[in-house]
Structure formats: C-alpha cells, structure tokens
Image (cartoon, rainbow, N blue to C red):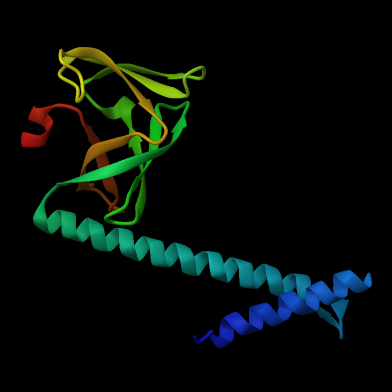
Length: 173
C-alpha cells in the first residue's frame, strides 16, 4: 500500500509533536513553530476534502440535469428542530438535507422530543406506505428508510435537492 509523501510529512509532524508533548517541551523546536505547520496542514486537508466532495456533488447535479430527477432509497440519520431530516443516499454516497417545510404538501411539522421523531402533518390525507387508509400525518424517525426524488437546483451554485415520496402519485410524477 502506497502512502502519499504529503501524507507522510503530516504524519512526521504529528510524531514530532507527540514527542515534544510527552517530553514536556514547548511546541517550538529547532526554531520551528510546529503548531503553525499543523494548522496549515489541517486547513489544506479540509479544503481538499471539501473540493473533492463538491466535485462529486457537481458531477451528480450534472447527471440529474441531463437525465432528469431520479428516485433513490435513503436512510434518515438525524432530525433537527428546523424541520429538516439529514439523509444518506447510499447509491450516491451523499449526505443530503430533506427540508419538509419546503414541501407544498406539508401543512406543518414539529420535532417530537419524546419519540425522537419529526411529525409531519399534511394539508390533505395521504395514502402513506404501510397504512391501510390515508393518513393526515406521519412520524419520521432516525433509521427510517424512505424514498426520495433527487433533482438538481436551477440556480448557481448547483445543489442536489430532495423531496420525500409518500404516495404512489409521487412516484409517477
């Protein structure tokens, strides 16, 4: 397995810093401020990861623009008080935000701390999955698997937008 020389340099700095810390000396050795170098390496590493992620997102946006919206399975992994659910789309290896407040079918949403769920109340009854009759509301919980339709935004910067699918009609759109 090959390790990049740039990565090895960062590892070398970390080893030197550990040696300095364990010996109780200051972070300045041989006239060099290692803390400054580590901060710069951390910043560069963060920027490289962000650029990589942004390139992947742009690639998926361009595909969605070219081929149109697509339906994916997603996993809810976090709920937030601002009526959003953080979802992971495994097929694209993308973490996205599902904002239920922006959905025109939704009348209201609230975070239920007792159940750890996002209670979504619809403007009219919806025939929800796994229910025999139409429901006025659904409880979205962490680890729920849902269907989402992904599409690319129209403006700049291009972003992947998501919409939760809850009815058969949603799938046909």
